[in-house]
Image (tube, rainbow, N blue to C red; front, side, top):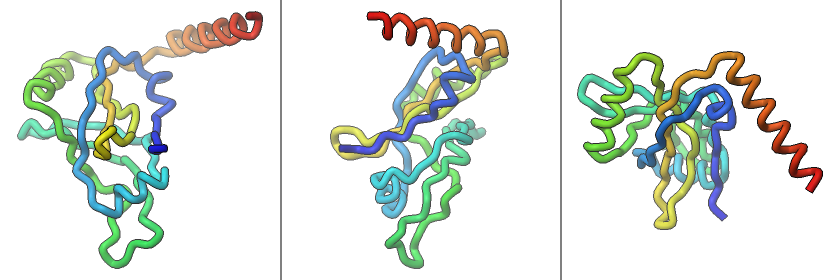
Length: 146
């Protein structure tokens, strides 16, 4: 079974408007570490460059345990691979004030390629977070009664 690394805090802190699936440029030792499930998305974020490229920063992929001198750096910046029309849509949306690009999930596709699901989201206020907690508790209580 393929490991899936999720950013659980992202959906709690942001109201996700739209999601995209992007490929990632990785080294071989990074792919092996992800397959072992040794990755962390909690502090990561995405940003756009002047060239119109999308990069992910602070995506922590632990060093491969059997790696040699050619092992990767755990917190290096990694380029995301998207189609041009998807990049244009992301650029257009992020020009609006308040939108951020958040990594949501890191997984392997059916073909074996590493993919990163990113979302365009707006930060939630404290009262929105409280409402999310309240809805989650109500759903949990109704499922127990059934």
